[in-house]
Length: 202
Image (cartoon, rainbow, N blue to C red; front, side, top):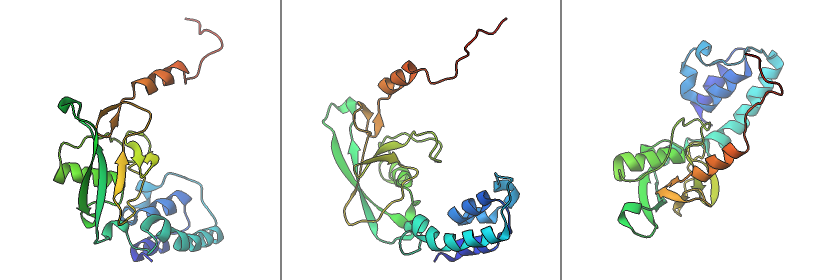
């Protein structure tokens, strides 16, 4: 069990559920005053808090830190990543390029690995990213055959290379960057906004 995570939960006083979830998910945030991270004003009873703490101790280490209860990024084994590469300026066919990085040197998410490759291994690698909080969807890509957000997907250490490709069924601008022109055109066509039934008088 991850000791710092358990400590952050044990130090909590009966307060809002959001504090427990945030501090449990990220032990580093437990060092901040609760006033800075509390987003809910609803309080929970001491009995509910006790029950939730017990369930967190059982479930959180496996969910957020891997099956052994240790941070996945602390793995000492190097991990291979097979990444889709395509440069329209070179007029070459797309290909898969393999990179090997030490997981101790990057964060626990797939996006962290991509950023590490771009900053320390190959600066020509191109991909989209923005909020890193799973909200904007910029880092959507196909990882090991499944579509997802790279900022929300943990690196699962494996002897086989982790395969990363751009979103399917779309043209590729470069590397992991898909052309979203058709997507935005379709999005605009359904007019996803509120409309007034009556015209506002001027």
